[in-house]
Length: 323
Image (cartoon, rainbow, N blue to C red; front, top):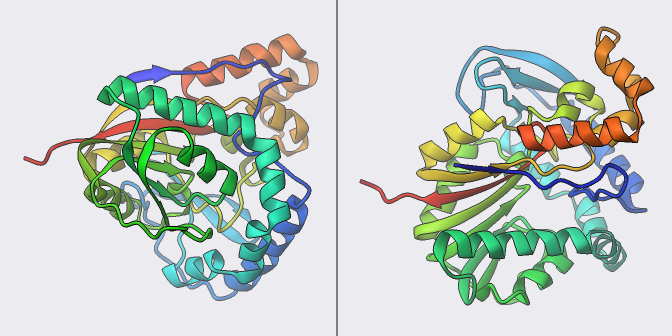
């Protein structure tokens, strides 16, 4: 398995989790909905949704939603019912905001460079692992950004393209069952049954097809440091798997992990901006944040990227032939 990282300087670094002027409205709308849904929660099973272990502990709460951490595989997860999660995903107020022309335009403006890097990453890795990167059958799961959909369509990757499980309206309704590649960006973090969801992608791929996968991870620096103050939101994030957890899931689903990296660029910057949330016993970290400088922060961010400890993972996996 190839382990890679992409280093960027502290101040100029981009982020997969951009922000825009709609974020406050978006977060408040989500918070009001989550508060109502939490009142209906009756979940008592706290087994890990990744490895099935019962050795789990309450890690933090956010908006009244408990997040548990698995002591066996280090994944972080929420236990809720499919009905409640489905009500969140289909909430009209959030969908209307996120699909509005104004919201989509601002997302395109703020994320365009990151999206170009993402598509270039897919094209380069597709050629590395399959020897071609044009005229492919592509399934794109959960993409809710019109600008990114358009960029993928125009990249030369696709002869056929299917947008699946998205709040955006699919233009052509294509049904692809023999995909060369599947794009699964930030999708697993909304899964209550990640193994079943990954098996669905397995079934839709050709033999030796490639799965491009990204997610927030539960072993990232900002998550473990800030806990509930990190940039995660119920029920937008119900699963934050660890690297070990991802390896377990992908292997059980029939995939071979080819490449793993954590190219996040803003972990230390975000923690610096929320240093009041650092626990009182974290003396070293508090000292580094308070006494550090740009050189310190840059070197530390590079360490996080290189060591696989940044908050956002990117993975390339190959469908293995069943025996």
